[in-house]
Amino acid sequence: MFRDDDKGGGGRPARNVLGGPLEGCSTDPMTGFFRDGCCNTSPEDRGSHTVCAVVTQAFLTFSKEHGNDLSTPQPGFPGLREGDRWCLCAPRWREAFEAGVAPRVKLAATHEGALATCRIEDLKAHAVEPG
Image (cartoon, rainbow, N blue to C red):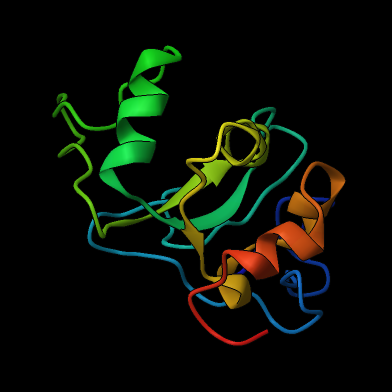
């Protein structure tokens, strides 16, 4: 179920930002770069879809205003609503954080690769669970 973050599968299990095994983010709606419900990543994932976020309306508005409409349904995509969990691109989460509209984060489901862009202190400050 989990992919190796270096090879896209077959190596060590993916790890979260806390150092433990990567947990699932959401299967309703189905999320992740690989649409496997987890914030797995690989070299092909240029956007780094590694932050498991609980989206808010403020974030959805921010994202739409910045060119990524996540709330409007599209073929094969139901559109997100407040409270949905979604694997966000780490740079977009960081942008939202800097703008004061970062969504909450499920740390156990946030891939360690997010730490290349996001500070663990910032992620922990937005955690939905203790970390």
